[in-house]
Length: 168
Image (cartoon, rainbow, N blue to C red; front, side):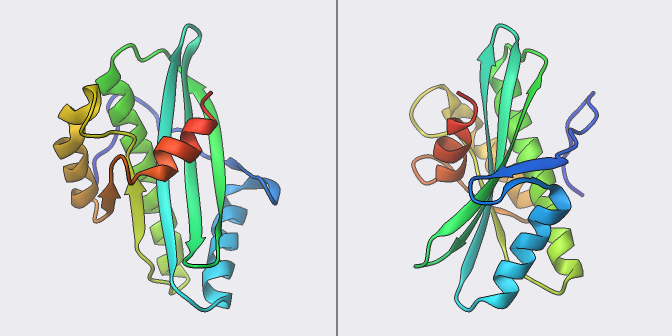
């Protein structure tokens, strides 16, 4: 059983943007991923990551699903949204992780229902340098508890580069 956010309804990630396909609903994103991995040869990586920025009007989040065909490039889908203002860095970092785990779990279940077994990786926007270092073990434990492999900076490009771009 995975960890969930406390005192909050889960955000419904109903629509995603794709730089190449435009606005898509979640089912179309999952179907796109299914089609790509089932119709092409070669190894794929699926990565989910999130980032957030604190502003006076609230906390702005972006969550990203990246699909990489190793040696052949990739694509990504992102969802942006705003929530209440999380003034605590710890709250924001853990909320990013909960959103990533939730979306990755949904995608994994969808792919399994289509008889596709491909590991999904999580990227956390934390690293050994700076104030987020104290959250590393807890977030890696959350990933492991939910049966995901996770990366942190400098290897967490899905969160620290792609998602970060859409929170600015």
